[in-house]
Length: 313
Image 1 (tube, rainbow, N blue to C red):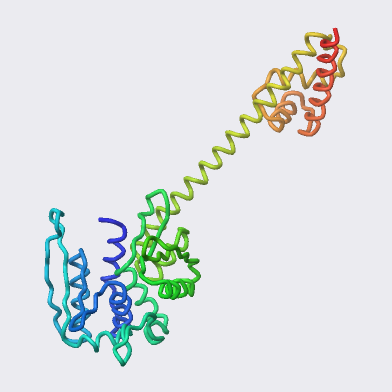
Image 2: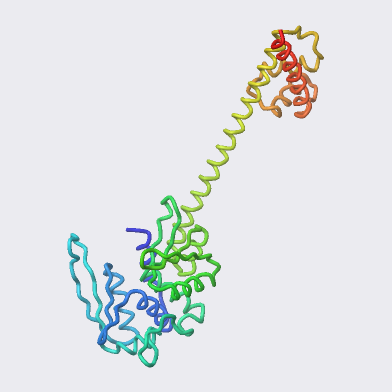
């Protein structure tokens, strides 16, 4: 079962008041119904959704929609479920703010459909059930989208989502408009808003794991980069020491430089901070990281002078 369907099943398990059912039905019909002169047609590939809408219509209007099941052409074992509503057609459309009192289609529902927080949440539930998809958090990206048929209505949905600070985006795709969320945190917030608690737990568990894994990878990459930097610096320092040993008598150097040369050669893999601790441990003398760095710069200066002298000869 897809993650989208799991969320939809959670929505269908919610208890809603009659007012909330009107708001829910408003969004669902607006995005998933065909209105003809004498009837409303609702088509879905999911029998559970078909039964759920059937029950809402019955609870609100005490009518039984006709359900027709058809096998989809060229699809094995895939069926289409069509609800047909003829009785109280206009009453349903007026109540759900699909048409006005004159029977004219209303693109944006009236305020009473989404004014209260409970009605707004119910409307978003109906919207998700009718026109949405969401990536499983195990996939490479987080993505939740609503596929809509009208620009003005899409702006309305963006405003509805952003009233919860969800940072929605809008793009045009082919002949439709897509309102979407890309941030994992915001998608988790949306699932909380529509009360899909099991989906929230699943989504957040995966998201936290992925975030932790990404953090560990970044730390490992950073540590690897630091190790490579340490080895490169140490290798350059050993090359300087080799030049000095080739052309000079080490006893002619300052005792502090001789000491650093000895420890750098012995512990070539250590960072300067680690080398500082090793010197203190073995000699009892405290030498800071900056002090070691200063002496290594002196060694480099001497090595560079010897290199230039070699070139001249």
